[in-house]
View 1 (tube, helix red, strand yellow):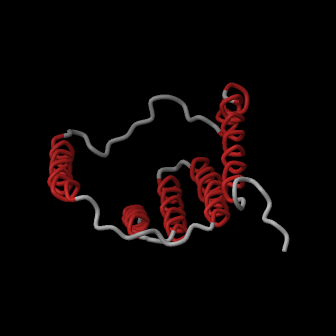
View 2 (cartoon, one colour; view 1 turned 90 degrees about the horizontal axis):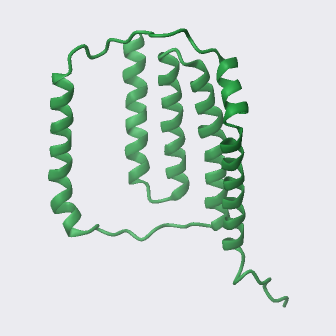
View 3 (cartoon, helix red, strand yellow; view 1 turned 90 degrees about the vertical axis):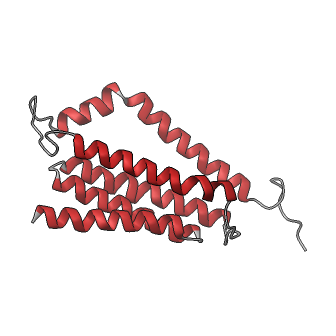
Length: 170
C-alpha cells in the first residue's frame, strides 16, 4: 500500500512540477506549486514524519503560497511573452540533460544497500524540535519573517501608480 501511495504522489509531484514549468500564467504556476508542496507533504507522511508534513502544509502550501499569489495579483502580472528560447540552450541543453540523467542512473544502479534505513539515535519529539526552533534559532526565524514583510512592502510600492505618487484627481 505504501508503494502504491508513494508512486501516486510522486507522480503528482512530478506532474505538478512539469505543469509549473509549462504554465504561462503566474497564478496557474502558483497552483501547480501548491500541488507539488502538498504531494511532498504526503510523501513526508509516508516516511513517518508527521511534523514535517504538517509544517509543509502550513508553511509552504499555506502561508508562502498565499503570500506569492497575493503579490502576483497585487502586481497584476498578466501573460508573459512567448519565446522559443535561445538556440544555444536547445543545442547544449538536451545532451546535457541526457548526460546528467545517465550519470545519475549509473550512480543509483551501482550503490549497494539502496533503500535500507536505520535509526541511529533516539527519535526526536516535536517538543525537542520546537525548543530548538523557538529558542536557539529564534533570531533567524524572526529575520525571515521581517524579510518577507519587506518583500510585501516592496511589492506594494512597485504596484503603486507612477513613482509612488497618487494619480491626479479628475
